[in-house]
Length: 451
Image (cartoon, rainbow, N blue to C red; front, side, top):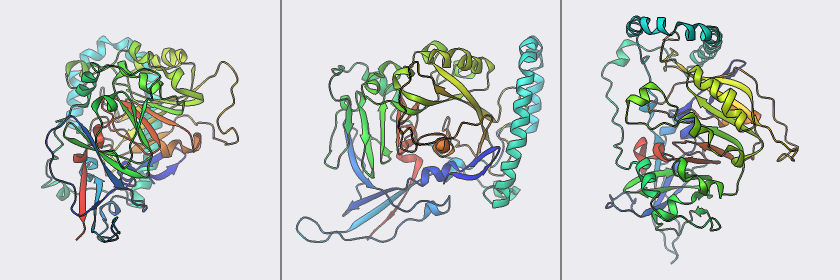
């Protein structure tokens, strides 16, 4: 379970445990297929078998099976079976210190005094809202952090632990997924009536790029698979599906002929830092509003939107975006980011960077009365002002999983969709122009065994 503690204030999550309980495990005959392949534009698949034993935490994730089996081949003989298990790199959740120290925070405050005076009116309008959120986060987080310290999930850090730490080497972005999506726009489009899904099976050896970009890719098996795209390997969890495209090529998702009971959206909001940087693209409010949520949502669909702390974006969601999609706001939650020792990653009173982000939850309102899926299944009403407290991944925009915190408020066998996703989850459909980004094999550690 990724939920370490659950209190009335919310949840303390273990994001790393959630990833590792998927148990990415590769079984290969004879020698492991780990030879480096030449650069190719084809897509190749290798089968990966799921381990039935769930991870019980960070330490358990490193335990790999040392036994090798000898199943029979077609001729009745035996061959060696090699096991290769993948776990997410734990150093990517090693947040020992706050991102901004008190001294730097004070300097930022002084440098922005003039800007605060110029924007005094706006600041005065939102100060009461910010004050309420501050009190909510301070009190609720303290309760969850104290429980985490008591149980040993969070722990006090000593100065000696910070010495000798090695810099983290991240994978090279040799395969730019967003650039591949741009290339895909020049491919001939498929007829709308053609089959819009690609189901991965054991016998698949090669699939063209056109098949990948213009169809929803499904892994319906109980096995994890590996996809090699432009020379880069990505791990695909079992029971997962995805569409790699940008907002201009969503038609295959609409042709998928599925509607979803839960839709999570993490749009690239426009802000000053993004404008100054060429690394990340963003969408305007109008572009976000054009996402075809009404066509994708099932009756009574739960819609969850990640949002930055700008009051402008919050107002847009509540007053314009959700009403345009016939969605009623039911709750506002917050994700609070802490270090391994329970400190906020940014000062709570920081004028710019806050240690929390918002989630706006809403229900799709149907104009006509339609029967709900599994109407006999009771789900609880969604409470307001819940906190999700966790140590964040050091990778940009790697959001914590919501499946376990939402389980009491959604149907257990529903259809779930994440938009602007950067990773895959079992039981979910994911869409985005970087949908495989955090599935890159270099974000995982491989432990091999066999004889």
